[in-house]
Image 1 (tube, one colour):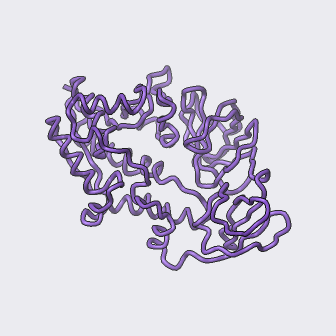
Image 2: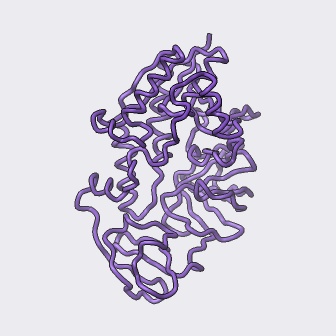
Image 3: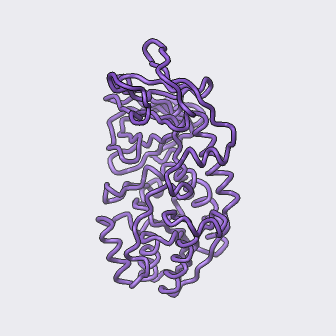
Length: 361
């Protein structure tokens, strides 16, 4: 019997994944990540990796009759996800810690444990699809585009994709997943989805940055892009992101939007909505999952997503040196924020992606 490790968060998706794989005849082993001090985590009800969720994962494993282990990644999660999250905000970026988590503790570290346990594969509850192609496994969008999570997995390496499985990728929606959990009598079948970043369950991103970087948040000026007029003051650029309109507190007049954040001078640059659009985007940290090798100078037509909830937009992507790329959009997109990801698609297939740079091409 082939052995498969399932990353179990205590939620419906990963629990249904474990149940499906056991039904298919796999020897299933559940692994749950401990990312916080347990005494602190147990009070974080909406967090996907809180103490209650570890308890729920264990209950599901017991119900399915499978082995279950908890792995302590508190230190690596702090260093590689939370610390980088704080530094990114202080640089005027809008980070996506879920992608960093997938890159590091979730795939890299869990994969290492799975191999140590003699597993043939590692499965997760992500809504993405994996299919075999002529050049190896390919990553595809989830069948339900409303729940598709491929944007968050753009940094998955080809080697990791060889070992990964995504049983929920072909599901028509969350109702189908809950029906699976109910069919197996799992105790989390009615559990609500987690809505927040796991270590920011109350949505207070600024509070997390202040705790991790005490004294690093500085007040500064809010400046109009057109003539440099100082329109007001702010209490730290970590409170703003590109495209934001609410919370500027600048009084009357035409609505203004955050255009960019100048971390060196602690300035928030604002302007009219028509100044938000960007047609050219520079990327770094590019991961290539398309056909062939990512040779510098290679250009291709594709569709790109600059936010997880945005529809793909037509563009031309040109690969550069040292894992960089440039994207030229057919039509300008609003809210292109440094620190976010730009993910490229060929229809359903994920071609790869990279991190949006602060500099313009």
